[in-house]
Image 1 (cartoon, each protein chain N blue to C red):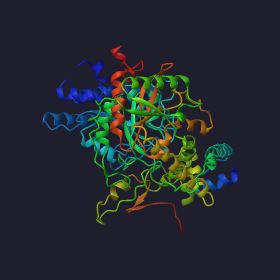
Image 2 (cartoon, chains in turn brown, yellow):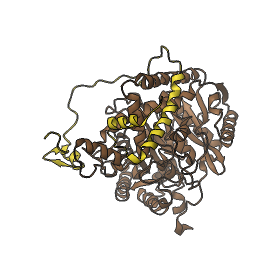
Image 3 (cartoon, chains in turn orange, green):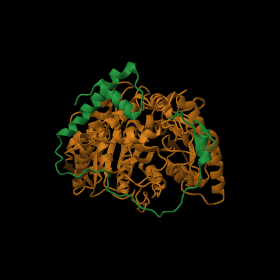
Image 4 (cartoon, one colour):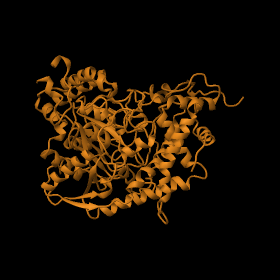
Length: 494
Length: 95
């Protein structure tokens, strides 16, 4: 097996290669570990590399395969976003607060992949507590976009996205609270899917905004996302918001024709603020889908402009409650020599949290405080229902909704300045689906100045199969997802 | 809605986050920026709209009242900043 092409394989190809005995899990795992060691100095996509236990898992997977009882992901190397608790492996959530936190248990998503035989290469970098759209808030330093290392990879799942784009993992888990899977997938030129709220267990996934957070897969192709979602999705009695509903085989419908598909195009997603190159790439993609027999239907989601304001009440409010657990008592950071309990809380949290996290906790505390609850939190919850109703009405007429994933391609580090609101508007097209609890995905659909552009596909509740089908058919006809940035070869191979 | 230094000090106390004297002006400004953004909500007509707490309006499941967890005290306390005799240690609360 020629080493240099092993890391160009998709997950589907890796599974086929392992089954055919073209290479072993140990070989491909070693290959990825070597690449991470050499190349990740440039990208900073991993916080923790899991060298020793990854090799042990790979050996065990090869033995399992030799005995003829290989589960779906037997020996396939993947990475986990550092928000998923991993038993015995540090789980930092991108924060100084959890820099020393080694969980005594696995998240359900991690357990599902372990049961499926996957090998865990390591834990990927992310915005602190998943709060950010550029990876600049990570305690471990920003991730660099492999397409242009002067630009951000997006966030919060920027480490997972960059690792896949740089071929330092064929697939990775991620989470999406307001766009944290879709926006970095778009900016790094990969495919990512945020499932319907409740489809993937949140147990052991460090909570940011519990009514919005949802785990999902990132990979280079829609087919790989389908394979990963088959493993990730499950009913979990340990997550009280997990939905007890049968998990379909997400690969079954991939090859269906798109003839007759009705695609809703929201007017509000093509208004001012959209980069003209991004707009053109998305329109070209829609034209390709029309060629395949789909019909474009102009629709309106009239409350779109209220999604970002509603989100920045609801998400900080839930975060301020969730993050109250970080108090220096049971785990994580504790300040030196506290003089009393209050001093311990105040300094532990001042030292452990970064600026963006503190800002959101304070905004959340404000929105929930006495006298303001009705004006902010209750109002935002009402607007949330209006936003959901927009989608419910639209799905009466169309099968999927499409538009850009983010308003422009990857931007340079520091370019959003000190006004947090400029960064918040990065998620203007993705946030509404989280508020509505709908599934959304992003697939590569072109380039602007050699920077990838993402096509967003929003589906109806539990309609992930159809979204994956659409993205797969698009990928069969186009080559955007097959492009890779330059500079991915190991030094010795040059 | 204007927000002032005193409001930030009160929020910091509620949230138990010490605010650095040197950055309090900047913090006040950035929180004012965020609140200006969320104030756009006030223009929305929400008369008679039921607040939505859950995307699919699901309700909490009930389960049988059975013990499902085993004791994990040693594992949990192994990662704590300070423990003694099975207890978590914090600074003295009562003299």
